[in-house]
Length: 243
Image (cartoon, rainbow, N blue to C red; front, side, top):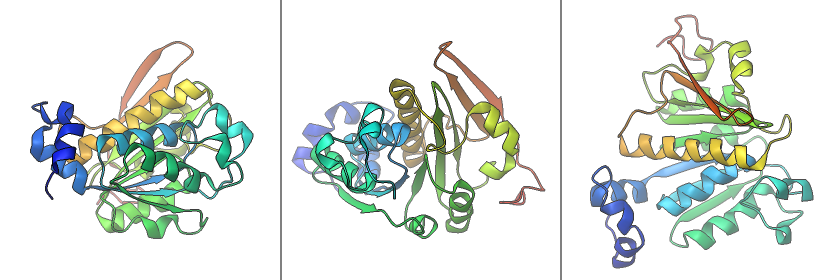
């Protein structure tokens, strides 16, 4: 995967960073990311991944865009009301990065099958257990991120690290690590969580930094506090079985 002259101009601020460089930007361009859910956090994550230069993005969200979505999901415009949120967001991403290959799916049953062929999955909605199972089967990486009210959480997974199922459901709920769509979200809090999710995806693509693997990150917007909890692989995990 090579960079065009326009790529070099567009991503110059990435390329001059020692952590990324030209080689890293090529990896971003060659990457494929599935974004599941285009609500508050998913919108922010998708926009930043497109802006970063991810070459192939698949958007999944069967929900129809409504007026209420416009208060928190920044990947949409009023002109797209009535479309699926996946189709609505696709236009916004292409406006940011017209060189990217962006596909949209509104099929409610398609999500687990879409995982195969993607390097990283960013899941903010949908059946997370099914997504994690598909990620494990595909040997892919994933970022799970959700926001409820002004609080949210994120967890990264790559092969060999603790998966979503290694965290008891009640612990996930306490941290706010659950799919969007089950409540309301403060728009800016969704932006914080979505931006973290996009950053985690880029770290997994570039294999740099310290991703949120084996760590559950939680954010409380009302108190402006962050909390981190270590996560261990469980031999009795219902999804990965500790393997």
